Length: 237
Image 1 (cartoon, rainbow, N blue to C red):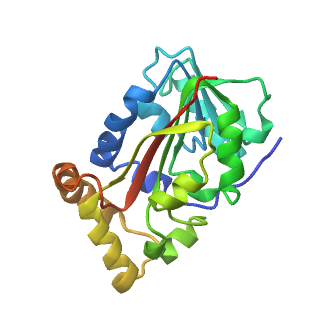
Image 2: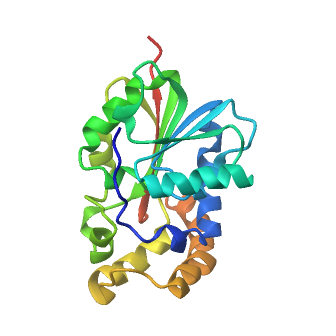
């Protein structure tokens, strides 16, 4: 069993980004099936947001044992649904016959060094017709000390992300999100060069910038943004 320690400290900070979470979650909810594998479940923020308690099975896969224990505690407390099950480890620790309707990576894939091997494994664990959902930071030229400090190996553009997806998966959608927030990232990249945003900065971005992005992104046809969202479907054999 793989047991890693997560070096990032941003999970609690970004948990307060309610508008942002609502924005991207509405775009992917249609792809969330009955049996779900959430890779890198962290402290359960995404689980709490997306799991509607009527799923047959929701696996919270987490390599950090301390975070996994916290997830288990949230299930016991009723904060997470009873259909949730915590497994400590990575995809390589799952039995090869375990298949899912949906596998999600929400701000996780950029933390995985061998991302191409990861998506290959993910495809093997998808049922025919199942969905792979990835949300990640976009554009390598936006890489900052903040990215490095929380364990990011890279940021993605459309080509980079498409290139690591197996041919057995068909692209359903691939878009950039948060065009207004892109300006904040540019400011940090070239001026502030901050290793960690403050709570005040996160709340300002979430309260004022994200609602503007929700309006502007469709007008720009989702061609700009500081995050990238992709959905792929496994081809039926």
